[in-house]
Image (cartoon, rainbow, N blue to C red; front, side):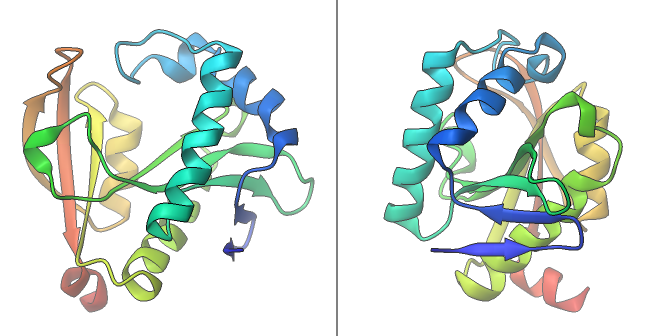
Length: 178
């Protein structure tokens, strides 16, 4: 079972006990403001997310990790990689992304977790390129992408939601040079 660690986080596979914290995060309108069309997710949708996340690990060898605080065991959110099927124009691609509970915003945890997930993607999974996609108005995620060394690729629109998004990217060679 893949488990990654950083100074403050354990990035691990999902457990059934994570559902309550995940559902709470996904029901927060501020957390979900820039996700899909901005609507919150109910408990059933969060449960389905857990099942998909685990299936993706089995299928791909990577996925969206539960981000657990090392000192408290609290679920801060998630960070990891998935295929961005919602934006066909960037495919084939693997997206690196994150979502944190509001209490953990601004603490550097997204950058810390994403750096380790990026290392895992390039060094352990052999990926050649990663993209990251954010709502055009989500400046916080844009700053994380820049801290990760990613470069702006394009602004486009998600077909299903008509939301404007910015796509950032980094190659393995660029990552190795950093």
